[in-house]
Length: 368
Image (tube, rainbow, N blue to C red; front, side):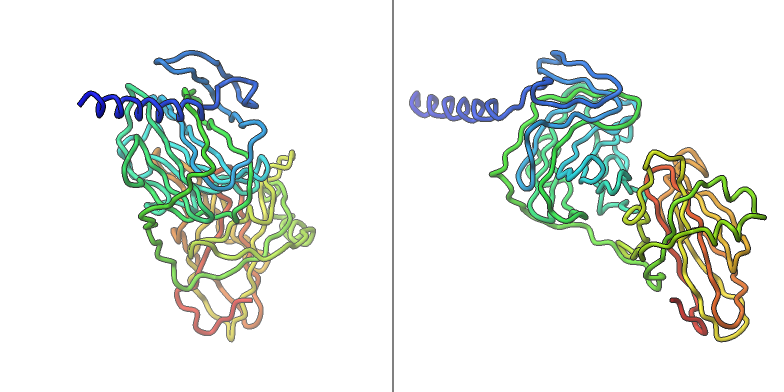
């Protein structure tokens, strides 16, 4: 019995020692900290970083596949702490973060890519990209992320089965790793480790997402311009004629096209709007119902005439309104025989620069 007990104790000690050796110290030698404020301190028995509105990037380390683990001390205040990984640059990466203030809610957390500086959670939403979880506000929460190719899994608090399995959106490329997040509330992080030799994905069962049938499959987008230019509709034709037209953007997730794929929003200028364009060829003069969605604001223009203005921004309709994308608006288009140009001037703040739409009755028209 003594020998068995000794073996168990020594085994446990060895495992703990190995884990401890993998812990990356929370200091400025190992981390490049870009934040509004931070403090390196001892907290609740752990060497920790207390970071607010910003990210700490791990120095001299690139990550492709493996396991990332860390502890985080959550509060009930609104915050979005988490981990960024495979950051090919500081504007393009994958991320997982906790909505610390939404314990138990369906959107208590979020996985999403970051594409040209935008985290489009208003596109990547629902049980495919988040899960309900009751958070602990009186102790450390353990986060484990396993990544292998296009697959990833999250385990919280040493769960035996993954809390979430999902398919990564971005192509697999080695990149930087960071911790931190947005929101006014600071959070403590501790016990950060990376093991590039542990990347087994188990019980991989991502939630399927049903596509919306009949969507316009692609949109052509213009160059970026200032939203306030649309305030003077007498200059609308001039604004349209002065645009340069870029690539087509395709619908993703069977839901919407992501404008940020082709247009950089935060380029140091106040510009935040593009035209998304389709050409509708009608076989006669007729009126057609067009259902559509956008994020965050839109002005709809048919044949150089403004016909609709709307807002779908986060909290624009009530305090819990998310502004997620869907076919929540509709307009009747008075089409003439031949070609008709529909422009949606889409303006973005944050959360997803998106456009989508469909004709409930496409008979007698062709989209090009």
